[in-house]
Image (cartoon, rainbow, N blue to C red):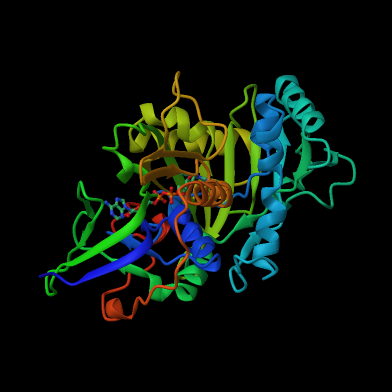
Amino acid sequence: MNPTLNIDVAIIGGGIAGLWLLARLRERGYGALLIESDRLGAGQTLCAQGIIHGGAKYGLRGYAGPTAEAVAGMPALWRCCLNGEDEINLHGAALLAEHQYLWATHAPTSRLVAFFASKLMRGHVEKVADGGMDASDYPPVLRHPDFHGAVYRLDEPIIEVASVLTVLAERYQDAMVRNRGPAILKADGNLTLHHPERPQWVIRPAVTVFTAGAGNAGLPWATLQLRPLHMVMARGVNLPGPLYAHCLGASEVPRLTVTSHYDATGRLIWYLGGGLAEEGIRRDRREQIRAARRELQALLPWVDWNPVEFATFTIQRAEAHQHGGGRPATASVFRDGRVIAAWPTKLALAPLLAEQVEGLLQTLKVPRRPVDLSPLANWPRPEIGVYPWDQEEMEWS
Ligand SMILES: Cc1cc2nc3c(=O)[nH]c(=O)nc-3n(C[C@H](O)[C@H](O)[C@H](O)COP(=O)(O)OP(=O)(O)OC[C@H]3O[C@@H](n4cnc5c(N)ncnc54)[C@H](O)[C@@H]3O)c2cc1C
């Protein structure tokens, strides 16, 4: 007979969605256990740019209404958590920057998009100054006499993603296990935990929640869509300091989204997404690096880009399927009997996902019981994954 453990909720997948949900359920008294097959954050989470969106993109798409309002509340909620003032206590995790900027070039279309976005996001956007006027509040790289665009400051902080994962992993370590194999869900709702050197454990949850990102595939009642991105990273002493900004073009997708990070040796990394990454899926690595150089040269011509090194990688965003393949407006949660599948759509929206899942648990009348997880005390715990810029196999040139 395999050893067996009865629990309230099994959470499959330890990206931001699974970790936030674990924290919320544990704080609310549920006997929850998180099962991760690789490392924490190893899917999309450690590839995220870390922007806690407050609706800038909704503004660009002209959305309003309850979804936009819920999203607009995310920066304040995350700040509370980071200050240790919420039940999800992220004290000890770091912010990379307090604000993301919107930056319009002098092209009339770019300025127009920025102007309308700022009107739609009233209260969450502040115009810094027009190019050429008092630009002391500009991000350092834009404080240049040749910069003639407009800059808006968004109420969107940027988090240091690994530090958030680390705080959650340390706080709820007793409630997470590494599974070496698929967490096989049987028809009776039981799961088996595998490890090459240990007897299999049978986990009997009242409810199972899949927060496995692309690993949620295979649940026919919750279909997944994968949207690829070709992300670019840049490093080198010539990088002109950290920058956190969306550069606007003529459409709702920013032409370029830049965030800045530090690798394991403390070197500054510019991480480039937005239109460059969306359109870049049609380009191979070399073409994508060329496109990135061209874009940076066009937007910031006063920087010498020649000595800067680049690397690229492709990754799929995993979300609930949408007709037309667009991005879902918010977190998506589906239920079939006692199995739930969920995608946050955005890292920033993990709190909304957790709230919705908890609502379903209440509907299902799942009891909140203190569960003794000590029988799993010696089971291996999942480690934190590695950022793309720290991956040894990444090719820089
Ligand atoms: C390039 C990029 C940039 C982004 N930038 C931002 C941003 O700036 N701001 C923002 O809010 N959002 C951003 N996002 C979106 C955000 O990253 C995702 O919405 C979010 O990280 C998804 O989290 P998740 O926990 O659902 O999935 P994931 O992070 O993919 O985690 C899934 C986890 O499940 C595990 N798993 C898979 N299968 C199994 C299994 N069978 N058993 C056990 N475990 C399993 C995986 O190993 C992984 O750890 C970005 C996404 C990408 C790709």
